[in-house]
Length: 344
Image (cartoon, rainbow, N blue to C red; front, side, top):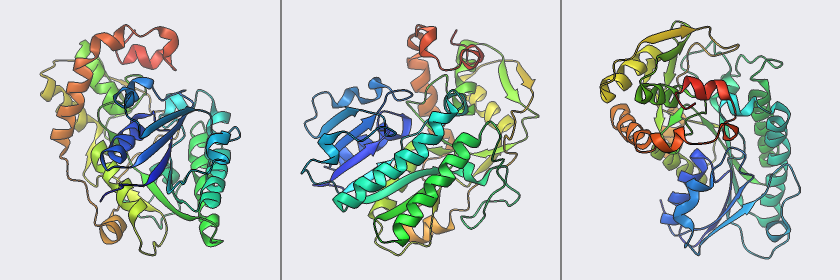
């Protein structure tokens, strides 16, 4: 599916997912306007665009009034992808109020931009809207089991509110909006201090430190490689069918955290001790998407095997191990997570 000749706004485009989406859009011939406040996004993720005339970076926060150059400009905008929000627990819990406002005010403002420009809109929501699910696997019709006042609520409830805003804009026919519910995704450009299990395990194994497993390690996750997810974004934005609501995007292959640890250690040939710590508050016990809607409406399913994706991700972190160790402590959102990852 090609995006040639289009102009796309990617809010959060300097982040892990956003930068890969920018790569794909540019490769498909689109003009890309990236908006990012660079709190969790990194300029290094965008170095490939330094000489790209079809790429523009605007450093701005979506909770502030949008820059006049896009809000009032005459330039055409065809698509708006809203990926603006810290997405890993150490990052979104560092400033929970800002996390909530990013999801709510940011989505409201970007929907307003879409309405004014007649652009299609995609909200990057999350499987966290399902909370600690009582239904397994999770279909889009499941309404979730979320703690509205817990330490993860700033993200979970913020995304729920953002889904409400996007759905209301669609019902009112103000914006052609669609919602992607993203499950665990991994790949190159993940931050080593983001607290996610894949990056934590790889960084700890590469540093020769103990591997931290929270709880028993028998809680399950489903891991989707980043290129597969981006393909889902492109297909969702391009879909002309009447969608029934949000679309789950993730890999339905389920495995335990302990199984993931064994795979990473085997790939790296590492001999590390596994230590356990208490499970974080409201951490989900099981997580696996029902992707029936994605298959039916988008013709989408993951193609990259876990083994192939882990190989690419391990290579990325191995190549940058020295660089990550040299990053200043103040560049790390949560020092404890950096220590556990073997960075400090």
